[in-house]
Every structure is written in structure tokens, then in C-alpha cells.
Length: 216
Image 1 (tube, one colour):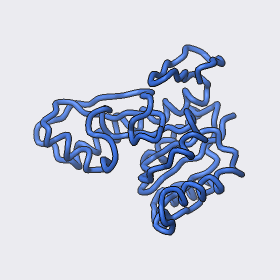
Image 2 (cartoon, one colour):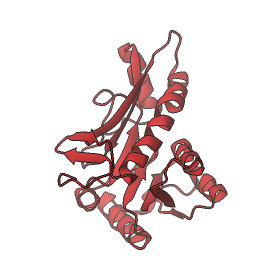
Image 3 (cartoon, rainbow, N blue to C red):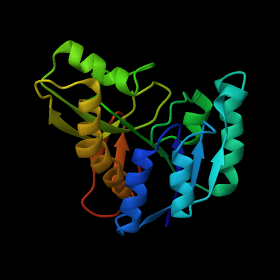
């Protein structure tokens, strides 16, 4: 059974998708053991409370830089024995040392089809504003492994939706959350927990059955 810690910063809709998937038995090889928020007022903490999941707050603003924050986060996570960290609307950049410690054990969902509209500073409505300004005809979401390069890790899964006439950043965001993010993230987490993701370089292979491979 894989222990999963979910890292959040805001409302926690992707956390809720994971909690719902767990309640339906779709994360049978894993369990959400903790929710950690970088913001004290995040509604995601209430979602964790309602689900009976232990939650912790580690306000990013209380630390001088990302390195100090990352050391505190490592100390918080250590006794939880989390084998997988899931970034579900987590807005903090993590340093190289943290990413090395959790190499190929952190998943993030980003609201675009990477490599489009991604990277440092691209999050939330900013992503959808950029997509609409560029006039793209499709957009979507990507689940990827986290590396020191923001949104630059190996891609696990992607899903697209049409950009519709009259879309606003808000309507496009809502459609991508509903049809892409909330579908992709639980699936990717389940695959990880079933040991079905093989990472070799910048590529991820989804294995047909649970096995152990040297590249992971």
C-alpha cells in the first residue's frame, strides 16, 4: 500500500477528485495519508477534515526562501512515510535537493498541454488567459513527474478539450478541470500506486501489469 501525501495551496478541487476516487475504490493500491497546505486559509484543508484525512499547514510566507521552506517540508513529511507526493494546486517551487529526494515520486497536474503555456509563473487563470490570447483550438491538462524545472518533468498523461467560441478564462478553466484534471490525476496516481509507471529519461511508459523495472 502506497502512502500518498497531497500538497495543496488553494481550494483543493483536484484533492477532492482524489478523495472521491479513493472513496470509489479506485486507489486500491494506495491511500491518502496526509494533506499539506502552503497556505493557512486554503479550503483544501476543510476538504481534508471532512474526509477524515490528517492535514498540516506550512505557510510558505513564513520562510525566507525556497530552500528553508523545502527543509521544513522535508522534516514534516519524514515521519509520514509518504512514498508519493501529489501536487494538487500546489504553488510552491521546490529546490533541487528536494526534487532529488523525491525523484520520480512526485506527480503534478498542470492545466495545459505541456509544453504549451507552462513554466514558472504559469498557473491558474494565467494559463487559460494565455491559451485564449494565442487563439489555440484545443487545450487541456497534463500530469507529469516533478523535476527542478517547473512543468518540465516526464509526462505521464494528457487529455484535451476543444476551445469553444465565446470561452472566457473562467469557462475554459472549469471545463479543463472537470473533463481533464479531475480525470487524469486520479488515474495517474492509481497507475503509480500499482507500479505501472516506468520512467526512462524524459519518457514514461505505462505498463500493462504491475512489475518492477530497473529504470524507475
